[in-house]
Amino acid sequence: MGSCFSENIGARLQQLCFDVDINPFGVLFNPASICQNITHLIENNEFKTDDLFQYNSLWSSYMHSTIFSDTNAVGALEKINSRFTPAINRLKKLQFIVLTFGTSWVYKLSDTGKIVANCHKVPASEFVRERLSATEIFDMYSELIQKLSILNPDLKIIITVSPVRHWKDGATENNISKGILLEAAQRISKAFPAVFYFPSYEIVVDELRDYRFYAADMLHPSELAVDYIFKQFSSAFFTKNTMQCIADISKYKNAIQHRPIHFETPHYRKFAAHLVMQKQELLNKYPFLIDRI
Image (tube, rainbow, N blue to C red):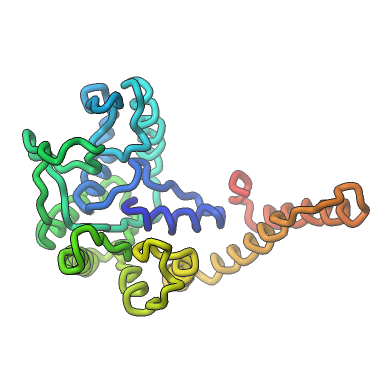
C-alpha cells in the first residue's frame, strides 16, 4: 500500500506469482491516509453512499484514488467494496505488508479537518494543506501497529520511502518532506520488532545517479531502476528457497513469451509439449502455484 512505487514493487511480485494485493484503495501518497485506510479495514467498515461525494458529475470517495470514481453512486460503491471486502479477509492472514510513504504533506477538508487521500480536483479552497511531523507519523503508526498485532500477531511490516520526488513543492520542500518520512520510518522500525525498513529512497538518490535510471520526467524511476531496486529488495527479504522458486518461475515465463510464427511445424509441437511438461514440473515442485501460473 502507498505511492505508485508500491505498485512498481507489487507488479514485480505479481509477475513472479506471489500471492499479493496492490493498493486496494488506489495509490496513496501520505502516511496518514495509509494509516486511516488500514484502520478502516481492521474495523471492517464497509463503505456506504454517505461516504461518497459528487463533484463534476462523478461520485468519489476521499479515502480512495480516482480509479474508484463513477458517474453514479452505486457504481462507485461496487468498485470500492469489491476491493474492500477481499482486503479485509486478506489482512487477517497476511505474512507481510509493504508500506511506501510518498510525502509528509496532507490535505484536510476545511469543514471537518479530515485528511483526504485524494482531492479529486475539488477546488483548493475546500482544503487546508499541512505538513505532518515525524512525531505525528510515529504516534499514529504506534497505535496502528498495536491494532494490527491483535488482528494478525504474525504480521511483519516493511516500510519504505518512495524515491519519487514531489518537485512541484520545490527542491527544498521536497527534501524536508522526505526527511520527515525517513525520520518517522526509522523511529517506527526501531520501536517495533515486527517492522523493517527498506532504503529504496537512498538506493535511488545515492546509488542510481545516472540519467538512465530515471523516466522521461526525470522524477520517476525507470524500469531499469525498478529492476535494480527489486533485486536489492529480493536479497534483503527472500530466502534461498524463494530465490530458487523465482528462478524456476522466471525460466518458465521467459519460455512462454516466445511467439512462434509457424504453429504447424514439428518443431513448434515439440516446443509446446515441452512447455506443458515444464509447467507440470513447476507445479509438482511448488504446488502452491496452482492458481497463480
